[in-house]
Length: 232
Image (cartoon, rainbow, N blue to C red):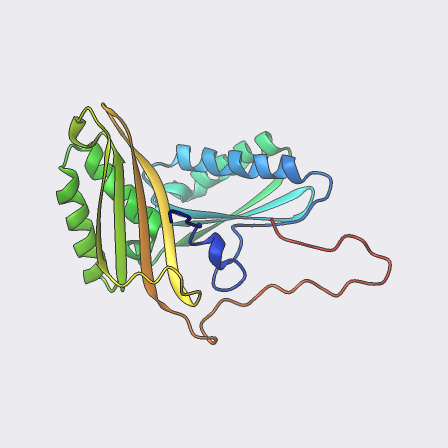
């Protein structure tokens, strides 16, 4: 009772892929910290861009490739591409490597769990009652084609002295079904009474073998090789 696993980590290699794609036996810890710094910088620099995910790939030690999935690509690109050029220079100075940035627009923001969680946080920061905020978001997601959703908020809701947890769910949410396309997002609403944690589980339907993402197979190892490519 009470044992839970991350919905995305539970499905890695089956219906989900890694957010970072690289391997390094020597610099694994440093690369992991660097990935976190890159994501935090982008999220902090563009809080209103509706950034869903930042995919990181390291083809070589001197290069980093980023794919930023956002609901408002114009904010990151800027007028004439000036903003994205400035971001690229800043990341190159921070990492000391060549950085390539690609922007991909999110077609359906209401089907991205992290964007739904950020919308709930924005409403709570605007002092909208928590039950009303959750109910409106849940209704909107289901109206846009969602198969199921659960939104949970924890903290000093409404400025109460004692923290509590409220949640609402609508539709199906088969968390133990591996073929289920479950998206998960977490964020915090910064209120005057303290942070409020917001978790969103979003069920977008079941995937068939034809619609599942292609698995990334490691190349065959030659005899005598100890370390092969992996993902982190």
